[in-house]
Length: 315
Ligand SMILES: NC(=O)c1ccc[n+]([C@@H]2O[C@H](COP(=O)([O-])OP(=O)(O)OC[C@H]3O[C@@H](n4cnc5c(N)ncnc54)[C@H](OP(=O)(O)O)[C@@H]3O)[C@@H](O)[C@H]2O)c1
Image (cartoon, rainbow, N blue to C red; front, side, top):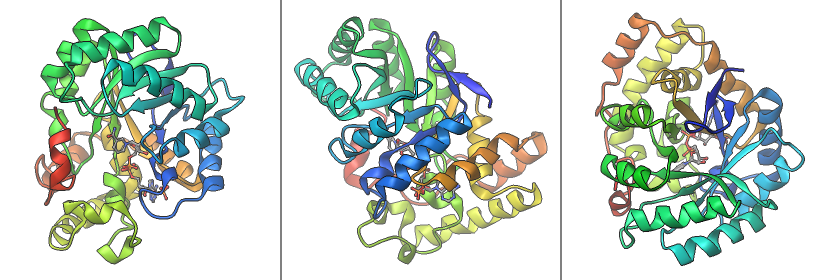
């Protein structure tokens, strides 16, 4: 399977990565056995990078990831800290390693830039965790370009994890080129737009009552119909290309640069097989132009997060 590097000097990983947020029930009921089977299928198929966070069920997702990846040296694991204060980070890494059942994690992210702590202070503490051998490399999530530059000046940022899909193309303008310039891997989360680009969500009623996505404006009545009209056209293109809608969506993310890794939420093994089809999709200038016409930057209707959470992103 095609491989891409995590950071300038980090390990090579499969070009598609597996996200384990769904294991904690964010998108409706989850099934622990199916989630762990998804990770094992992924590792067997060359998807070696697995992403989790302490915030995903207060260690629940980390625990499942640790169990599924035990005895699999090819697994390259990332997890995330919720806050940026040095004292917090020193305790949080030990909690995460405890949940994972590991002595070291390959990549440790700051989940959201902490508005109360200068990024230099956070990066200094992260560098100490690297020096202590608890963390292989440091990442940021949803950081703005100026923050990425400031952080990278203190300690190399190996990966920037930020939302990127055909429904959220903003990072193409500045962040993706910046990452290429600095040797940072752009880990693209929600590449199938939290399920919208799989064709399985046709109305709000397709979401479980406890599904967090019901709060996302993009998935709510009015906006959803508008987005679906474009998604149906994309599905038609996928059919003409002999592939599926999610495979086309993941292939488009892969086409954004050699340093871009789509991080797909996959909570059951059959998702792995489906999404691997993205590696066979070839997007030439004609296909990319058609995609741009269907879903140009800024085309999606509705915010990508509930209004109250928008202050935490791109900070
Ligand atoms: N840093 C951050 O702030 C942040 C925020 C959000 C997400 N993330 C990370 O990014 C990962 C992915 O993001 P995400 O889960 O929000 O969005 P996503 O990958 O765009 O979408 C995941 C959803 O699509 C479904 N799906 C995936 N492939 C499919 C296929 N081939 N056919 C049908 N359905 C398919 C999944 O179903 P199943 O779950 O049933 O497999 C899940 O409901 C997360 O797991 C997490 O690791 C990070």
